[in-house]
Amino acid sequence: MPDIDDDTRAVVKQALVDVLEKDLPELTDDTRLFGDLGLDSTSVIDLLMSLEDSVGLLIDPDELTAEAFDTFGTLTGYVASCLAAAQEPVG
Image 1 (cartoon, rainbow, N blue to C red):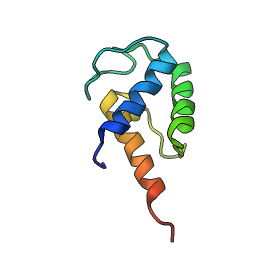
Image 2: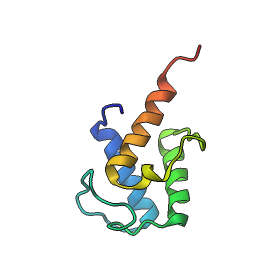
Image 3: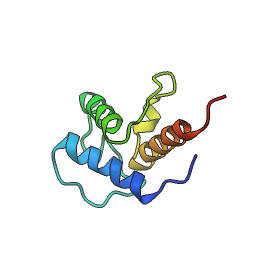
């Protein structure tokens, strides 16, 4: 898993704020997206679209797993991995 910088954390938190339409407390890597924040299956789709729009995230549906949405830490790790993969040269 790539290093997760503060910018990535901020982008993911802002996307969660936008999708859930509420202020969020300080998020830790262990904050559960469904249990603690109230994310649901519909908001997952909105969250993915928000991340795609805000950072140009390219999501590979074949690599997307439910585990990516367990916690704030797993989601930021997933986003960081996607961003890192997008920056790798092809070929």
